[in-house]
Image 1 (cartoon, helix red, strand yellow):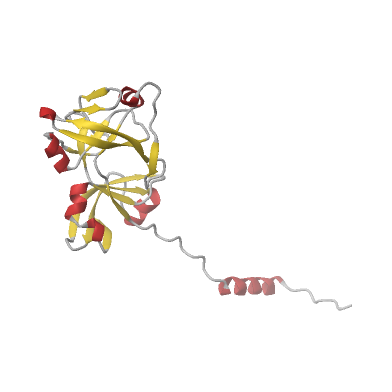
Image 2 (spheres, helix red, strand yellow):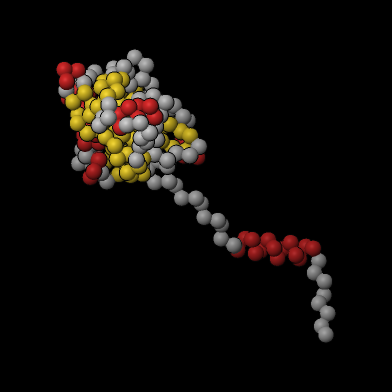
Length: 221
């Protein structure tokens, strides 16, 4: 039987230190890829408005999950009627339901309806114009809530720290394409769970030829 000589503490610490120094450093968490999405015209409804438009007891039917977790495009659509009976026949509803109704349009949509829709952050509807919503079971008259949603970027708090911004700040977006543009003053909407995503309306996306963009970059102001 062979008796091993005891190893002193200094030797143990040197061996451990050598092993740690030879070990590869842990990989850094990958940066989340920026997604730039066109947010086409759509409607948000309350539970009561859904029942008025589609019948008692009806709820929204999810059709397609959106990029942000928990949000979806519903199968249901409504007709939007503006002044002088101008209309958009099939406008998609997005879920889940909200505490108040809201209609988000691009500038050209608002022109076609004859509505002078102001640029607002989602939910800031005080003093905005309204419209009439027509569904298969009834009609809802919105006294206010028609807006042109201002361009914005969703991100979580880790993304915000990486960019050096906070909720409510403003950023710029550079889009490289056949019609390269820099869109200024994107509203930063930072919270604990959002994925990194810019929302533009159809006019902005088309003007920048977003479909054929080769690079999109967020820039701190």
